Each structure stands twice: as C-alpha cells, then as structure tokens.
Length: 420
Image (cartoon, rainbow, N blue to C red):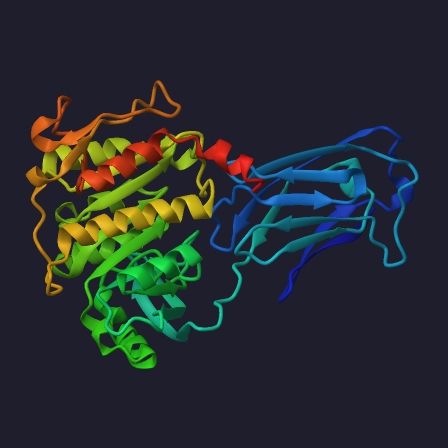
C-alpha cells in the first residue's frame, strides 16, 4: 500500500486531501463494471448547496446535488482508461453560480475501485467592482453567546442614481446572502436602498451587541458618500444560522427595524428573540430541509403568533431543501416582502410607523402532513374564517396575494424548465 493524492483546485487556492490507495497495478477493475460516486457539497460555511453541477468527462458523468447537497453519479468502467501524461485519470468538476469552481483531480484507480463519499466545499466568488468595503479584525460574542475572533468584512452597494438612502438592507453573506445579485441591485435602485453585507465569524451569525458594528457602518457611510446610511432604517436577511444575524437588529433596535427575513433557519431560538414580534418578519422553510424536519420552525412561528401576536408569517417551499431552489425566484419574493414592509413601516418623512396587526391580512397555515403545493386562504384580518391566533400575518393585500401565489407555484418545475 502507498499514499496517493487527490488535489482540490480552485482559481485562487489549492487544497490537498490525502487518501490511502493501492498502486494501480493492485487494483482490479473490469470493463463494464458499474462505478458509483457519491458525496456532499457545501459552501465555505458548511451550508449544504443544492443544484451544484457535478461533471466528469470520464464516463460522461453529469449530475446535480439534491436539496440537501448530496449527489450520486454512476457510469460503466472502460478498461482502456489510463492515466494521462500528468498522472491524472479523471477530473470531477463542481460548479454553482456565485461560487468558484472546484476540480477534484483523481490520481489513483483505487478511487474508482473503492469509492468513498466526497465532501467538497465551494468558496464564494469575490465581491465585484462598484462595491466599496473593507476588512477589519473583531472580537465579538454572537447572538447565542459564543465568542468569536477574526476578520470581518463590510461592504455596501448604493446605486449612483440614489441621492439619499431611504433604507438599508443588511444581509449576512452566510449561505446565499449577497449584495451583487441583479434583482437586489434593481430593488436598491427602485426603492433608494443601500445594500450592506457583513461576513466573517465575528458577525455573520449575529451579535449579542450590534453596536459593535456602528463604527464600521459609519465608515461605509463615509466611503460611499452617504452619511445618512448611519441612521437609515434597516431590513435584515439571514440564511440558515444567519437567522441570528437577521433577528439581532430587530431584537436590539426595533425602533430602527423595518422588517426581517429568515431563510431556511437552522436554529429555532433565533425566531423567539425579544422585541422581534413587533417587526414584520417572514420565515421561509423548505419542506425537505433536514433542519426543518428536525426543528419544525413552523410550529415556533405559530407559537409566536399565538403567545405574542407576532407580525410573522411562514412561507413553506414544497420539495425544497436547505438551499434555494433558484436564486432569482427567491430574491424576487424576498424583494416583495421588503417592499411590503416598507409600505407598512416607512412614513412619508422616513419615520417608522408602528405595526397594527388588525390592519393587515391573514393567511392559512400550511398542512405539513398533506405536503406539496397548497392554495392557502388569505383575507383581511377581520374577514379571515380560520384560526386567527396562529394564522400567518401579512402586511397588506398586495403582499398577501404575492405570498399566496408563491406558495402554490411549483418552483422546482419552473427551475428545471428553465434549464437551470
């Protein structure tokens, strides 16, 4: 036996994973033998990535990761297969929009003779030009009391057409969060919103004391030439444990918060932070997400509605795992929520208005046992026929109709039909 290597290469770094494998002469592979390759793909923060393209010329491998980041690909072995001049037998390529490609170069026949599940991590692509920001060392305590030290990145995007920022949308780059997506940047332009991203262990999962970011937001305001950014009312977004990020501002600064979004949360307690019930919020859940199946965050939202009359709703995404079914589809719906929250909370002079639950709409709760896409009843609070205490709270008629339509749409079919 001797050690052989599989190299994981990206455009910016090289990672080497060592595996024990016999020399090629000791490996028995026969023509027509079925080879099955399996594994899991995650981002650099260990969030499972769905829809990752997994390809290899050898065997014509062409697969995609499932809703929880797992993949399986099979092909028939050709006994004419051999190493090239560089000693490479085959190369698996992992590709997903918004991430740097990973290439696994296979240097041993043992990899195919006794395949083990792979674990592959994709790094996010760097922030694009036109966005200003900086990196700074921080020492913080996160939203659930864990101390973290390291670098934190702060970036802001404000369209050139914006003379004065009406609001700021804070997004953690933990998981799918970013400020580069065209749909978000169009929202920023149309609604005069600054897109602010924060990244790095000291900030991306939330902070026990959000004032630790004040000096850094002030610096972003100076770099962007928009001093009003410092005191701008805010929306927040977090994916997975980034929900701690999304919830900590409404919890600590409800007087500055317009609304917040939790996308496929991994931890229920974030949804119950104090003060958050007074701020419009949406919790998006994938019905086949293992974190949802284990945690049932929809029940937490019902509890918040019933015990604290929270301005909350859930959006159940049938058949969807921990990642987004499609970034465009998700961001379009998130923008609908943000616009509705701004309609409900922002006064004519930029002041924040209190939420009146009785002035909103209600939507029926999703039947998890029945599953699938469901057409859920919506109506003004006073006219709703179902159980009002646990029904989803929706800001107004326009958003209620968007919420109803999103929930009944087969986004998986739409996604496949678009060739994504």
